Length: 222
Ligand SMILES: O=C(CO)[C@H](O)[C@H](O)COP(=O)(O)O
Ligand SMILES: [Fe+2]
Image (cartoon, rainbow, N blue to C red; front, side, top):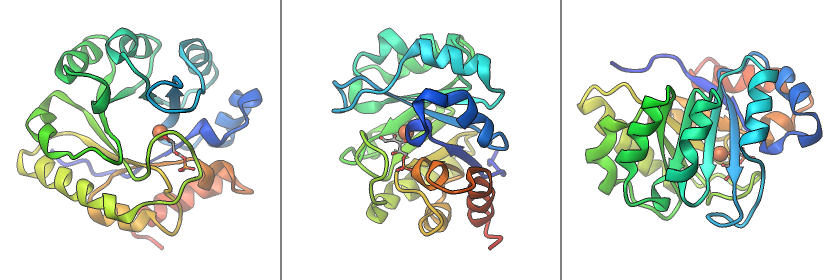
């Protein structure tokens, strides 16, 4: 069944980490709140982990979309599901057994997400899609916010969209990196339905308005 509604997921990577509850409240109308977990191993950057996600879960009603940029996701991913995240994405590059992690995530009550980094092809994963509820295509190299969108990576979005539609799968197709008012329409046209935006939301004078504008652009209203 095709997903109809476009989701905008502000990334708290670009928020003020000393005031995360307030920052979440500033984007209360968002569909998901995107939480970038980085371990300084898979990516050369360090952000936050399970204790912060647990506290955020208690502080906001926005469903948490955890993007794990960490090694050894088989050890850690389920904890984020148990902490109440609606979706937990781990990187295909970090495991030899993505199916096992996906099954564990679903069993723990969250959606299972497969994230694909800039330099990774999607074709080897097409046969695994039924184990996943979301696919996150990086439109930058994972690791830092504020990077420029790479339109050539939308070819991967088109490939995944085709596979989802061919098999009538219920999968959210998420794009992450450099999404803003100038790039979101191209991502939507390629087939994305879920849009992560960090600097374009938390760098805006009015983050709530930025979310509304991005959603409207994604559904072609402006
Ligand atoms: O996963 C990420 C970085 O690895 C972030 O979600 C992403 O960078 C969002 O920030 P921006 O919209 O500023 O690019
Ligand atoms: Fe992310």
